[in-house]
Image 1 (cartoon, one colour):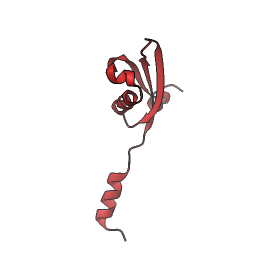
Image 2 (cartoon, rainbow, N blue to C red):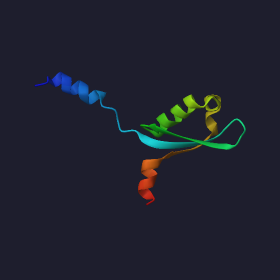
Image 3 (tube, rainbow, N blue to C red):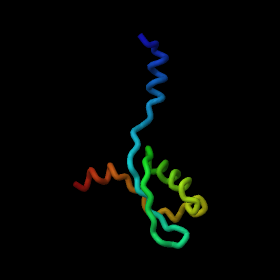
Image 4 (cartoon, one colour):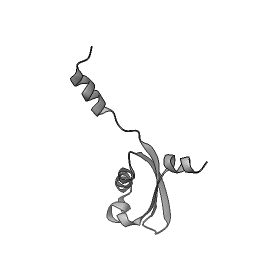
Length: 77
């Protein structure tokens, strides 16, 4: 039988379910671009997009839209 300490550690190590996000932004040529990634929240999706696209690191306000696929698809059949 596992100790209660092991059970607590297992619960803490369980990651939250990641959702699919689309990030729409203006690139260095000022045209709209989009990337899709998995994240736990809108904020994490924003940070991941900034890590993946150097232009967004220097110009984070170029992000136009962050959209969660799972939440939005539940409202649009």
